[in-house]
Length: 421
Image (cartoon, rainbow, N blue to C red):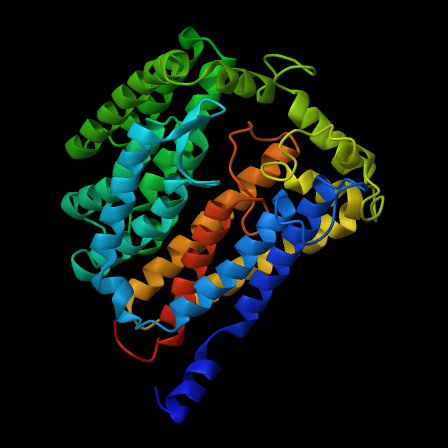
């Protein structure tokens, strides 16, 4: 690389996004330190502790990210099938030799480190999906292109469900949004939203109420399109699928989900109260966040945090530490940083000259948004606890590295946007 090329590369990289990334990682380290702080043993460079390990993860993540920026941008498009294949292979390996933690066989033990393949499957899927759409399906309007795009997403989702890691599997639903940006009919989004509504209704109302409502809605649309035979057939099919879906949800609920997952859904929907059992985490998390009030109790001063009332506080419930020690102001800063990052990613995605880069950029934004929404939602009790990390902030090497790779690949593609991929 010549001096002139190096200067142009330095100028083209979106350093604002990298600065946001560093800020979020720093916030994560500070709050992980606070969540497990012990005045007798805690030192910043105690590398045997979670915060010490997180510091190593952050530093190695930065090296990994900067290394990605030095690669040829075409590498990610050319080798996307191989990268995807490796992540699928790891998802199969974890089913055979994986370590079971909290009921999920989702980690491959590598000495003192545990690798979680489902985290890396996200950017592998994003790369192959971007490659497929840019090369074979510029417009997702025919059944064949939609089918193959769906297979790319559903294959890793299926293997993750076998672990079973429901939280990580649900993240793959976020790929619906980049597909919609690339031409997928809005009807699919309506179907997706309808499935969510029916899922909730299936728990709150008995079938003898829901089924007649579905038939009535279908009858209304059939009456409006009574002279259009193709539309009538589609409506009849949709009604049939909706009714079958209700019974599939019940079957999956009783046969697929773990008992603790079923309890969490029931608590979230108000069907059960269990403040000392399955609802304990959320209740303690809400107490911690609420006690922070406007400006927080202060760094290392949170009582819920200091005395370990909130389980998994350095991982899934790290946001409760932010809420208690930094208050509403701290939460607002973190959410604002995430909002700025998402808006920045969408803006970068829209300015791409290649379809591959644009699709991948929207995949990155969608995955990060889904994680933020679900993680913060479960800490404040509006979404069932499904156990997914807060990007760049929660403790975990697999999580931080996978998000770093996910983000920096897009930054490399953006830096090379004046070329063709």
